[in-house]
Amino acid sequence: AQSVSQHNHHVILSEAASLELGCNYSYGGTVNLFWYVQYPGQHLQLLLKYFSGDPLVKGIKGFEAEFIKSKFSFNLRKPSVQWSDTAEYFCAVIPRFKAAGNKLTFGGGTRVLVKP
Amino acid sequence: EAGVAQSPRYKIIEKRQSVAFWCNPISGHATLYWYQQILGQGPKLLIQFQNNGVVDDSQLPKDRFSAERLKGVDSTLKIQPAKLEDSAVYLCASSLGRSSLAKNIQYFGAGTRLSVL
Image (cartoon, rainbow over all chains, first blue to last red; front, side, top):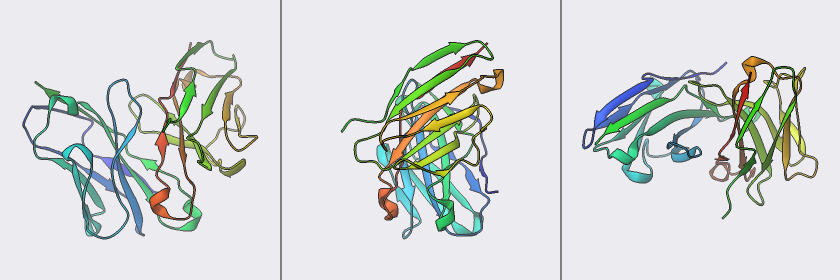
């Protein structure tokens, strides 16, 4: 069964620091990749997605992610974080074959705390 | 555009009691999903509906969990009887459900936090 691993459970950093969250998945075929974010007290929101094309994708709020197929990775980055980026971040994968339906497999999440 | 609505937001019950959660998806979304999110973990799919038919319920504990989407719109998820390990946030999501991948983005509700004592 496919799985998604997020390397860090908790990250603490100061405002203006750079952020990189790791995500690896264990599926050998073509995949759709997602990062979702959950701000305190709010619902899960889509941050960015990759379906095909340019492996460097840009999302909302200055976030970007790079798909590296050879490494089965889809790492999330932001050059300079703000206090408002405090949230939990989830990487998710959908294998792109018909039998997979639209079933999202999530990583365990990374809690990011940005200190003012 | 209204988002995915869920109720109640919180529920506390004792073990062996029953509980039901309600979800109203985004208007026009054919596909509806129920996820279970245990504290410290990512969401895990329990069941997926396409209109009022079940697409995937392979991870639904069918001895105690049931779900329905009778008219292809609202859905209810029921647990009967509840166990301590059912304490979690139950998330509902919906998507357009079309064949185009770009239109299959899942939008999530705020969830129902269940505590089983």
